[in-house]
Length: 233
Image (cartoon, rainbow, N blue to C red):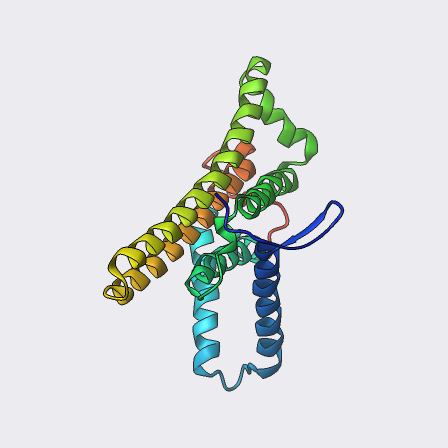
């Protein structure tokens, strides 16, 4: 069951509530970034600016813990992924709305982006031939298993987030139907915590997959070279 209702259809083109909600989240992100670039000041940072800078530094530190020296390079993708999934998960708290991540098409699209990013950063690290060579290591016989592993983990990434968010919203609905408004605050807190945890896990899995692609030809431990060529310092 997917939390999406058809709003408009014209031939093969279908506009659903999930798409509209996703566009709304992206629009909020664009507006916040636009206001931040105009209102924030280096000389006089306010409370909101300090909080946002702390969030960005926290995400960069989490990336550095997995892939040292690659924080700034991976921050735009991984950071945006984390923030979008968190916002999409929390959208289910708004009356009348369902989180886009409760729809399998959204999580499949996110998982596909992660799939592409793994190969993009892997090729950027070792070059096309060098990166593709690891699919034949240690033996060309293992090529089908490597390809199957790439496919299965992408599918698992999509289905896992979809199943968790959909079940979370359904459980919240059932509890409210049974208990009425007797337990709104504990249920609300549980939803917030679970939504943030699922966003963190999705982003961390994406980061681990990217790290696996980047380190497929990682130099020996004694080498001082960073895992990515051309890292932003």
